Amino acid sequence: MKQAQTLSQADQKRALAYCNTRRYSLRDRTILQISVLAGLRAKEIAALRIGDVYDTSGQVRDQFTLHRSQTKGGHARTVYVSAKLKRVLDQYRTQIADQDQKDPLFQTQQRTAFSANTMCQLFLNIYKACGLNNASSHSGRRTFITRLAEQGVNVRLLAELAGHRHISTTQRYIDVNPAQLARAVELV
Image (cartoon, rainbow, N blue to C red; front, side, top):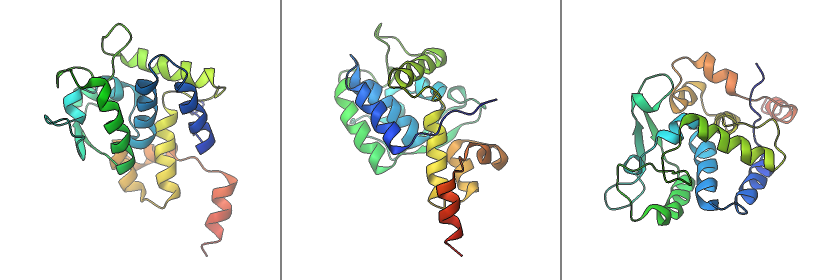
């Protein structure tokens, strides 16, 4: 099975720039960024509720729990929100200011929750439209894990952040390229 493309900084900028041309640009940009900056699966992004991410005063939470019904493996996990993701979510809050805590964080143009499948389709449509033909809804997740691995984050921590039960699963997500190999040997 071919793995989803890991996004370079340039790929990510291109996708975000394309989102600026779309009708729901802030929503779409936020979805792409939550994928890359938190490593969430499309199913998990689709299942998010406003109250998962924002407290009752509208502030972005430092961390939130994905309940077992929201995850692929049926195991609850904690998602940690970086300062960068917090800024993205602060901007997005303007889109949802008048909505209830129980409402979906991201809504379709019909004002309903995304399903896992419609969220995957959104990612595919955006990536294909900007020429990233090997990218999929899993590209942000692979990018998140790979970038942290490149920074030296321990695979056990990566597994926990990704919600993997086994580090062998996490290791398959880490993209290895010649530039990384060349940097690695310079550490000796």
